Amino acid sequence: MPTSRAYSFIAASVIIYLFGNQTQVGWLYVVSALLLGVVVAGWWLSRSSLRGITGKRQVAQALEEDLYEGDEVNITLEIEKRKGAASALLRVEEFCPLAAPDSPQRKSQLFIPALAQGEPVAFEYQVTVDRRGVHTFPPLVSESRAPFGFFKRRGTLGIPTRVLVYPEVRPLKRLELLDRQLTAQVARSRAGVGYEVMGVRPYRPGDSPRHIHWRSVARTGALISKEFADEAQPGLTLIIDLFNYPYPITDTKHTPFEWAVKAAASIGDYAQKRGYSLHLLSDDEVLAAPHGAVGEMALLQYLARVQPTGKRTLTEVMGARPLQAFAAVIIPYADVKVVGALTAMHQSGIEVLAVVMDGTSFPTGGTSAAEITSALRSADIMVREVTFGEDWAGQIQ
Image (cartoon, rainbow, N blue to C red; front, side, top):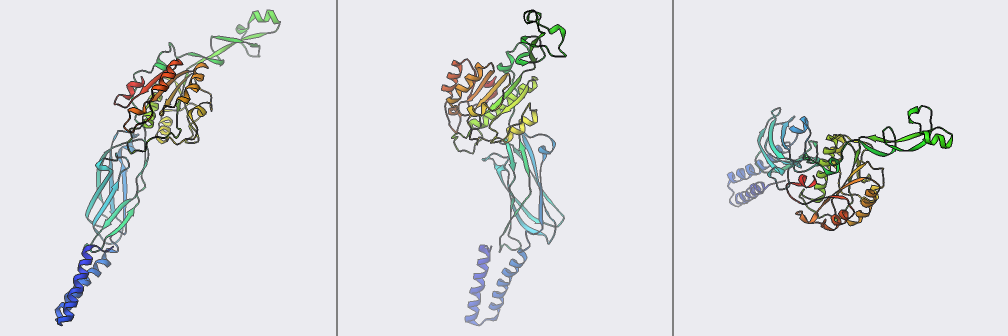
C-alpha cells in the first residue's frame, strides 16, 4: 500500500515534469524521472520485506510447571529471517491473551530496525496471568515500510501457541462439611465389609460361620447370615451449575461464575488432601466430567475449560448419577428452584453444602443470594454465601 510519502514524491515528480514541459529546461526532466524512479525502486525492493520471516514463542513457566491464574510468567518471542535479503524497519504487534484486558502487555508493539538472515532477534516480557482457560495466541501482525517508507507491507505470522491455565486454588484451613465428622470411616447404606449390621440374608457359600444369625436360623430352620454396612472412606461429589443463565456481558474476570470455579477448585483440593474420593457432576453436554473418582490434575483440567453454556438446569443434572456421602453444590446464579432438589438430597441422607454466589456484590451485578440461602437454611442445609472481596476462601470455610 502506498504511503503519503510515496504520493508526495509522485506529485512532486508530476509537477516538476510539467514545469520542465513548459520551460523546456532539460534538468527538470531528469529530476522528475529520478523522483519517480526512486518510488518505483522502493516498490520493487519492498516486495520481499516480509518474506522468509519466521518466529517462535516460549511461555517459560508453562514448560516447567503447571500454570495457575495469578501466576507471573515470562514470554520470549524470537523473530528470524530464514531466507531472502535482510528486512528493515520491521514492526511487529504481539497480542497476549494471558494478560488482563487493561494491561499494557495485552498488546505490544515491537520494532526491529534491521533483521539479517540467520540473526534472530528476541524480545522478552512478563505478564500476570489474568484468568483460567485454554488461551491461544493469535498470529503476529507484521508491518514494514522498508526501504524508503514509500510502501507499507502488512502480513501475519502464525506462531501456534496454546497455554492451559488452571483456576486459582486457595488452600482452605477447614471445611465444616468434612471436618465435623468424628471419623473418616462412615457407614454406607449398602452391603459390604464392616461392623454395623444392616440386616440379614440367606447364607451363601464362603460366608464366615461367625456371621450366622442364629436367632433367624432357629426361627426359619435355614442358614441365615448377617449383612453388614459397607464402612469405607466417604466420598465427596462436587456439583457445578453450568446452566446458561443471563449473566452480564463483561471483560472482567470478577464474575459469579468465575468465582464459583475457584470455589470448586479449592473445595476439591481440600477434600483430596484429606483423603476423600472426589467425584464431579455437571452438565455433560457442556463438557463431559470424568466418571468415577478424579485426581488433582483431572479436576483442574476440567475446571480450566468449563464454561456456563449448558441447557440443563442444576435440578436436571443432579439426578444423572448416584451421589457420594457428601455433596458440595456450587451455585453461581441464585435460582430458588434448586432448593427443592437440594432438600430432597439432604433428606435422603446425603450431607450437603451449598456454596452460593451473591451476584449483587460483584462489579458486574447479578442476583441476590438472600432468598435462596434463607430457604436452604430453613431446610437445615449447610450454606456458605460468597460475596465479592479478597477473602473469598475464608467465606467458604
